[in-house]
Length: 259
Image (cartoon, rainbow, N blue to C red; front, side, top):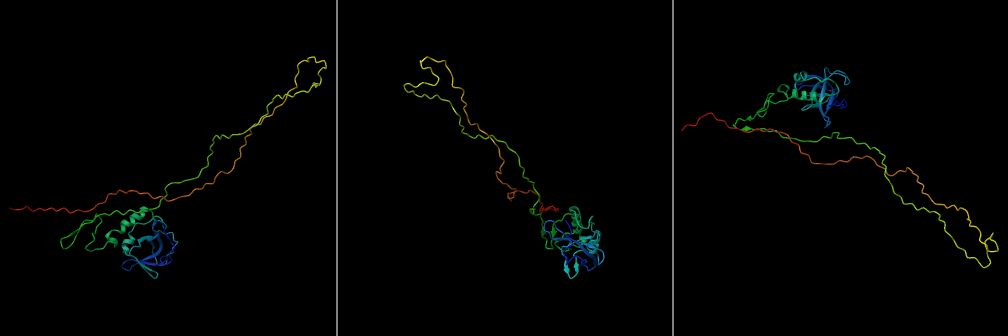
């Protein structure tokens, strides 16, 4: 629980106890971490204390207080305020310090416990309250379950390289050699052939170069898709198990029935 020095109608006001005795100047207001509502005030002795003082103030509850012009009347007495546990820092209350303050101001001497027929005084567990007509009022504990938003997990986007094999069909073309026969007319002869018709030694026409296509593979890095991290709220049912106590009536008699 942190202090808030901003409320202009409270900071700098003079605080009085429930009987009107001056307690000091309000130099800090402590807000609840969940509701952000004022829960405690910090009091510094004197009527003109500076709000930014480094002195650790006295802590008093706001519950039941009455606010006026430059004056705040608390619902506790001065003895309870001066005997309250002190905080270690002027700008913050730890959960342990707040629990100690709550326990301190719950005591009857603090003035928050009323002395009437329906309230049990004392620091122990409360028992049944007996009325004047012989009836007994029983008490029980009730379970109040609320939810608060707390950090659950962290998420981050990471990019990883993944390789996969891709099969792409490719059409290639190559040259093939074939023999073509050309008919000769009467009297035609191949150049270099003897006119006598004698057979010439076998010969070749030389080598012919054939060409073929080959696949060429090239890789290009291009953007594929765009992703971003977003959050959504999901609702699920959860069960809370807690032990609660209640009071029961047990009748006990000591007299023996006579015949």
